[in-house]
Image (cartoon, rainbow, N blue to C red; front, side, top):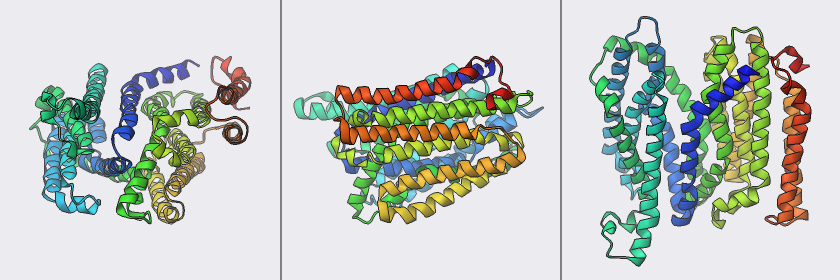
Length: 501
């Protein structure tokens, strides 16, 4: 059990900035849906989906390349850092100049021909974020977690502050105190552009606070070393792009493939994008697990009972994710008020997306086999499989089911990746996962969800006290059932094969 406690501890440390940061950012969702139109929310969803792809291009896997070469025996860490940083600075400036030069055509291609300034904002943001990525990975490599977390949270805090300033305070002053000097910085016609401007300010502040790290590495370029780093990192670019297809492609293709006008497509995208955000709790659980699990798994692999530990971790991971699924879906009639009524029609996608992310978490848990077996190429194969499924299914399902089709495509993609990863993995690095128990928890979770849906539709009116108690009872049933099933294992101090009998 001590090994599992270690994983929990690492999860808390590595996930702090991610969890707190994303939760703070999530507080902006009610602001966006109440201060901006559904169309403007669709614009945000669409543009940030493109940004996800472009940031991978801007960094081209060099963060991982830095980790790999900085930790090589007899390597000069300062030279590796300087080479990576100088390369990223140079390429980011070039990429940004190209985007700015073609801002008009790019804006027209993404359906916002009158707003080329959006492209300019994000050309600069992408360059700044790519440049800051190398100092951030060095802080991690040097175990300077306080500075890493502090600057990450500062970035988020600045972004939130200026969003509130431009979207809440300034419009209030514009209506009630037109002589206020703060209105010199405000133009109501900019609208959603202030979301991007706030992001730009936050990225600029981040670079300023990383100035010491930038000064210590800039201008130090070893061409021979750079070629080796790029050769190592370049395949990660394609893996990253394929992974981003799975994550963000649906929000790009919805704008193009929905059978309505460009404006209505953007509105539909705004509904889907904000309902998508209600899956944040599952995303956070998976992200924190991913940050902590790899070092834990690698530290365990030489131990005799390592494979049983991996199996047991999977078991507990599924339990936690099932609990999150129930917590969100059963109380969705309360949680939905984070949004405004204009978005309620899209809530049908939330259970589908939560289950999709649950299978993504299972896949990431399963993926340890190809990392331990030195067969990382399979990670690329599985990701490409997911990308192909995502593209094909989105084109097939969006014309039939709209954004619900995109959610279904996401679920099928991650389910397929998990299934194929498991089947192939058992050939190369067999782990005794308790499939019967895992499937049992998943089915039991869906049964409880169906029961909650039936209660909400046919028995108790959502939002009432008795409805709330009924939903809580269903969650309690799951917790009690898990305790009764797992209590024997919880009493065992060491993980053994008995856990899987």
